[in-house]
Length: 343
Image (tube, rainbow, N blue to C red; front, side, top):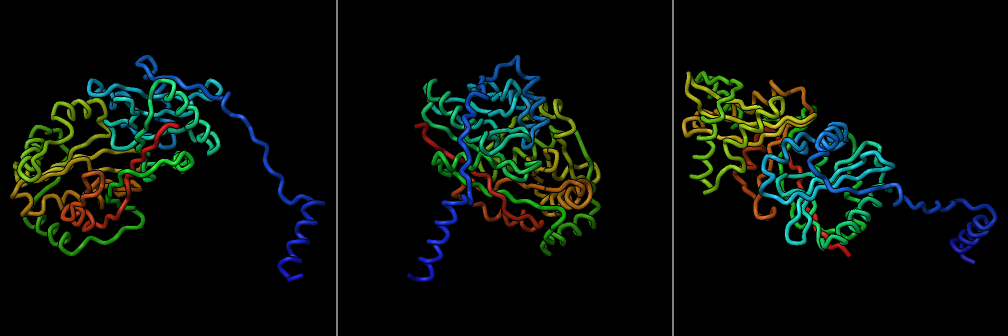
């Protein structure tokens, strides 16, 4: 008998007499959970849960989500465990498909810190059973990127793996961890110095009208598109979330040369929109703005995120745009989109 066979024989004998590993008993958790459709009367309960969750942001608050409610058929779900709200899924439905809400860049299952992996597996099974009964055959799911997690919250990705979900879109965002910064490229430092030499100054502002004109002109000229939000929409959202949505402008004298609109969550400062006039670009207005926001104003926040530099479901990378962001020391974070059929 070879050494390996002898060793296995001894292990088998010992295991039979004294089991080394006892198999866990299967527990049916399905009866613990209840799934309900969201309706407006649950807004306060929903919003309170978002504030307590481990991976929610103010964008999941109904006062943010519902600003464009007429565009989407809301099909958000609320998951209760033993009568207590345990998880929520911001979603809309269109043509037999459930979308992890199309009005949001990311979302997915927003969870209590008490949620376990075994719970989420059951929750996904129950959600899919619920959807199937209501005629939904396919799900497009956008999880919350880890940079927004207050504690680890990727139980949903494991549940997606178990139901054979596939990544259909991968977008690249550019992110700075403030405690592990990468140095600015030399050209970015030169541009900041140029802005200072030309006496540009940064101020927080509510002049959304002036900034939106600069932004719209740039997007129309360079990309033949408009901002996702209209001026009236972003003004409304700022009025509802004044501590989370802020605008910073670069001035030369009284003239506005550029601006950055930021979204502030618990640990991430996200650049939602940025734009500059031709003179502002020449004088380094955006370089000065980002230097101020990253290295001064919001240095106490763990993460600064520039947002995506990809289009066409992630297949088209805007190399000039991402080069600018990486010049400030940002590096890649992926925003994924999954798809699966309900079987």
